[in-house]
Length: 434
Image 1: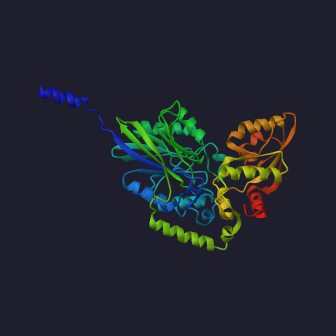
Image 2 (image 1 turned 30 degrees about the horizontal axis):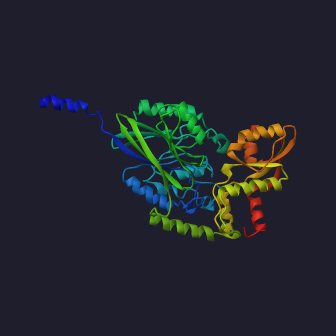
């Protein structure tokens, strides 16, 4: 009888015990080495992030970067130091996605940067890159892949670099990881817009987890509707780190838990990195090429939120272009402005792109089509009811009119020669304090 009971107990046990693995991810760092002001208070700082992630790595976690680690033109740190931080992540990051800004300084510079790191840089649909990597943690095989979003051909101007269809590449990557590499988990680490991530999850079965990137969105852990895929997005500039715990048994994911970890003062910084950042920042501010960026150009009596900054800016665009309405993408405004002294470097961090104002004459019917498509993802200056038969003068950025939504702006366009950030600066300089 005891033998029968023992046989019954053994056969009732699962074939494989459950195993939990921890995955961490950050994205769109854009050379923001120092802590900075956000709508939620002070956040970020690479020394804090490295302190936290190094400890997690030692505890057995896998760590991934979603790419966009540099940003030519702003902040000044990026132009002076470019990829200086990439080797700091050696031994911490397991794999990085190729982001659209990572080759901002040209292909030769990118290759020099890549040669300094020990972690693979992935992009399954970009020429010259590996598409996938496999990691084993406590017996669990975790396959990861990365993609260049469908907007990379517009954004990345590197001669000879080519991109193929992201969904086709994702299907091939998942098939290779599942069927050839026999992984238990498939994870996408970047680098495309969130709506493309959601569409991909529906079009490509077999992806367990997508780490959001490129859209700079703060999104907590959620299951994508009509899929078995989980999604989480850690915002930008190391404000948050995504932390996800996957429980795996019988070769598949049984449960997903996790959330966003704020990178704030309570996180112990890596002291060596902290001292290095402080020294490099002092050198940057003393450099004759950049020191004017740190001079005070205005003053705010109260902080200006990202939303308020954007609303004020589109009104300025409308007024200086003598337009009826102004439109600018949300991605043009990346952070708020704190109370107190304003420097050009702070303004460049909040508005990192040198966008020129483009004026366009179109009918009311055409303007309505533009607002229907672009409006939900943009800031629009105040406008009343649109008359379909009336002609309107519309101010927008050269990026919107000539790149992102060129097909909607088939109209009589005029380059005004006015720069969005410069016009905001003029309004600050003319009326201090604010």
